[in-house]
Structures are given as structure tokens and as C-alpha cells.
Length: 419
Image (cartoon, rainbow, N blue to C red; front, top):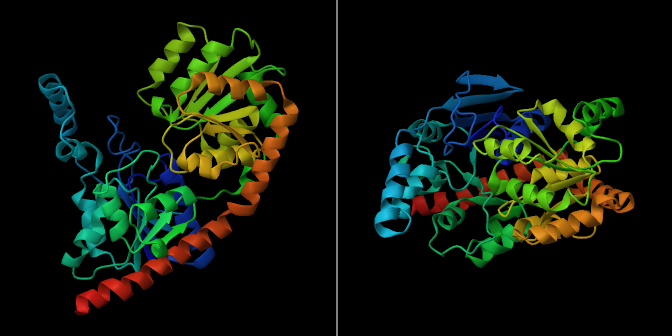
């Protein structure tokens, strides 16, 4: 099968969609000998980010996958930011969506051209808010329209208006890949055809998380972690929206009465890092900040913590939960849609109401010095990953979704075109 994957960022960029697209792409080549190409942006950071770092080369083959990185338009970002401030002062409200969307939707004529000219049997794209996911709306204008599968990764914890652009894209694609059953059921309620939605999520290679105890001991010693310390960990984008701020608030409340508590924050550099650094330097909070670590260090980080927390109030899945479980660590997440659908409260995880720092502190306190509960939740999580989220089964499900998309395309689009 010839496959074109389209995504906002790709390796070496880090993040959930990047992780999934890289592994699915490479394993389709490895398992099925498929011809996989990737069209993406040329930035290390998300295309809407104020940060930009060009990734070179523009084209290369990575583990059998042909990756092409295309430029995109950013010149209008300062204008929209300035315009938003002026509009807010004049009218006391945000810019109209028709303008603000230009900041977040990714404008890349080069990526559109790659989609228009591809000879692939199927196109799969993620994530739903970007312009390239509009392909089903304009493919009829191309000489050779292709089946289109959408890995939406849509956040549905808040109600959307029924005319929301994301829902139009979900309805227009030939097959929709949902991360969780929660996402699937919500989309059905919004009118997306049930028969074209498949729930898959993402996968993990358990063997890659085997770790040498000496490496873990060295890491803990290097970062001043004592044997009796309880380390609460976060691995992900170091931004407020991922729950970093509420974790720091929880530490402020707890560390005076829990002298053995430390908070480990690990992830790529963002514009929120100075806020974290001030909490360390000016408040003296026991925070271990690890920025831009190499991928091979991730498992050491997970094994060095005692409890993993992702306190984000907006997730479509959360592969970091799987990674923590792969290292047999208990996890805490927010009690909301997709996260609640993935995590089994009381079995492999504890949950708290998003934004409620007191409830988060309560759940942390339950786990802090209870090694038995930590082990039980961590082992249950490991078993769930082993049963449901290994790469062979995940990649087979993705390939099946592509076949469903191709079949739906030929049954509906081609038939309609003939009429």
C-alpha cells in the first residue's frame, strides 16, 4: 500500500501526534513493507507557536519513511496578536473566529500541493484543527482525488457548536480514527456516521522501556533524589495548559508537611520555562527541571519517579500514561472525557477534578508513602498496556482503518462522481 501521512510536525519534534505518526509510519514499513511518505512542516515547534526552529534537511529517509518538511506562513502572527489586543480594548471581546483561526490553522500551500499531487492509495492526516484536514472539501478539484482518513485527536471535553469546522471535517472524511471510545461516542452524538469511526489510540514498545537499575540510581543521585524521597513526575510539553502550573501549586501546598516530596518536570523548552525557573530560584521549591532530554533518557526519568501526573484539562489520549505504566508507575489524571475513558480509576490510576488543586493534593497524599498502592496501580497499568496497546495490534488497526477509508471512498465518492 502507498500511504501519505500529513502532520503538523514530525521527528525530531516531540509531542503526542508526532510520536504516533512516527511509530505508525515506521512500523507500516517494517511490518507490511508499505511505501510511506510524510508531509510535514519544517519547524521543531508546533506551527502556531511563537517559537520557531527550522529542521533540516528538507527531505530525508528515516527508517524507511520518506519525510519531506515544507515551509509555512508565519508573517501574519504578530499582526493577529497586535490586532487582538486592539480589538479587545475597543470591543472588550476576542477577535472574530474568521480572523483568529488564521493564527492556529496552519497555512502551507506547499503541503496542500503535496496532497494534490500524491500518487498514494490513501492519505491519513492529523490533527483536525489544521487546514490540511480540509482535503475532502477540495479534493474534487484535483485530477486524482484520494481516500482520506482523519486521525482527529479532537478534544471533546467541552461542547462544540454543531456547525464547528472540526465536526464538518470529521463528517467529510472517509474514515475517522478516534483515540478513545469517549471521542467516538461524542462524535456519533454530533452526527458523524458510526460505521466510519474506529477507536484505536496509540501504542508503545514495552521492550524499549527496560532499564538498568544502575542508570536509575545514577540519575537520582545526580539530581539530589534521596532514597526516602517521593518524586512526583511530569513528562511532556512544559506549558501551563499541560497541567504544569497546578502541579507547582500542589507542591506549594504540600511540601512543608511532606518534606520528602520533590517534583520532577521534564520536557522540551517552551516560553513557560522561565515561570518554572522562578518558582525554583525565588521560592526555593524542590523542583527538578529537565529540559530537552535525549529520547533514550525518558525511561530513566520514568523509573526515577514514584508517581506520574498529567494534570492537563484538555487531552485526546495521553501516550505518557502508557509510558508511565510501561515502567509500572501509578498515574493520576483529570476526571474528564478522553482521560477518564483511558484510565480505570482505582485500578491503574487515580483521578481528580481538573483545576481542583485540593483534590489533586488529596490524591497525591494517598499515594505519597503508600508503596503497596503505588505497586498495585502500576502493575495493573502495565498489564493494560500489555493487553491493549502494543504496536503490532495498534498498527494492524491503523492499516485496517486505511482499508475502510479506501472502501468507503470508492463506494460513496466515486459513485457520486459517476452520477
